[in-house]
Image 1 (cartoon, rainbow, N blue to C red):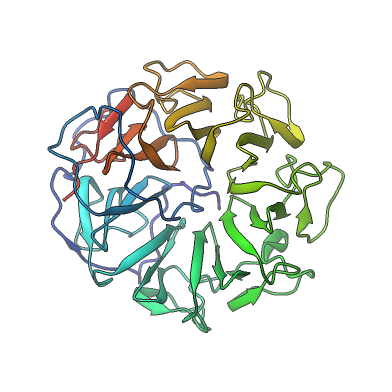
Image 2 (image 1 turned 90 degrees about the vertical axis):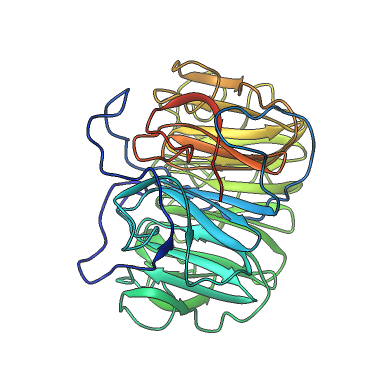
Length: 417
């Protein structure tokens, strides 16, 4: 099931409660721009820590002074989240249950996810399940039909359960459709569905209900990202991908099939960040941005819309790139402290004040410096800038967290608690 599809949890599942929710009443009319989001958008790879530092930039939208203590931002499907002073605050679509059973169908402003304590350091949003790291422990909750909660069962859990064997140093975390992956002490491990060999274990047996080591990635792994049907990681500065290769999203020739992981020939060194999207992938290598895979809306950023089965340099982004995020047929990157985006733009997710798609990067309005972290959901984007969070794009369910349901083609400030 593609990430971002508005699907409810099984009837027996209600997840956690929340503390406060305003502006999340049922919609009385269609959003200003109408329409429904496209499927896909594997941004469950978000959740890496981004420091709330830097200067410059001018926040737009509503809200007061930026809050203190924002240490991470993440998004998945129609949900945005931030770790604020150790607590997880989320906003947007609640049909997947992340915002809790006591919250309405959606919240247009952040709510604090209860039951996780105040020491959350990272989190990841999947389609029907979620995970968080707090106090050195990794816990997951939600749908568990494929073992994606990692607790040795296939029983759904409305409250966080400990991942088996997880009390180890965790440096990266990512959740997808029916899969979760993490980096433990430099080793990549995954659990859940093994469709399309998503576990990366060199064979294609059944799903795994507990973490299993990804073949060949036992040490030196610094980043991992779960996409729609594929996963990518960085080990010793080189990029590796495994899973489905229908659109060249593994960064190898379209004719190559198998279990992987496959090392990308063009990205064998200098890789510092990686992001797996719906049917494409991107990486930061030696300060430049590289993308590959499905390209029907120009999301590879090379000026054309042809499938690109091997990594290609994003036009104009040869240096100064520090982070990259793939979403639902769109991509954004932090470049010299500012944000540039490319690809599909029908909801304003490129942030340039228009709804015109672009096959090359365009500058996000008002965010030309001071941005330290970036994350993408389904047709919306959020950035950490000057200690606060700003989002733009699709907003019928409050994905932008600013108290409205109106799409915005420029950044607006999230009203964090």
